[in-house]
Image (cartoon, rainbow, N blue to C red; front, side, top):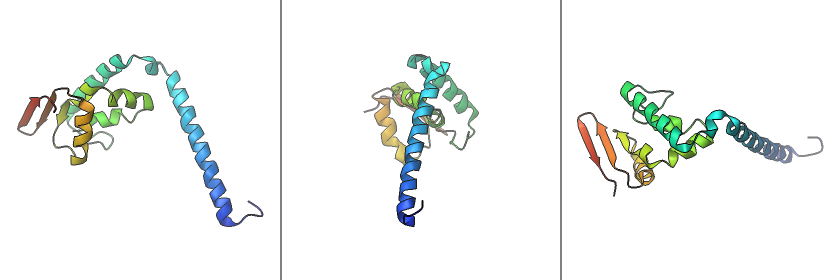
Length: 131
């Protein structure tokens, strides 16, 4: 930008980039909202998610870099709508395969909202209610 110091020009360009990025995120959200799958009721999406998670847990291989013990994470990264549905369905957080990264324990217990948990891994299996 002529007549401006490099630092001022860079700061302005970074602000403009942030504004454009924010606009693109908003446009993507509106485009995604128009997709037929975005109009499915959350209860139906939860059923589909549950079936997909079950299939991935049976397969037991990492998919797209996510450990086979955390298939629900991959679903929550598809779009904002799917993320909201997945994060707000307590049943989605009830069937867990160990080992899980320790940093996930609090979030999982919080999101399960008292739903009975089923924990398994190796020769270990536990089914019970969360505190």
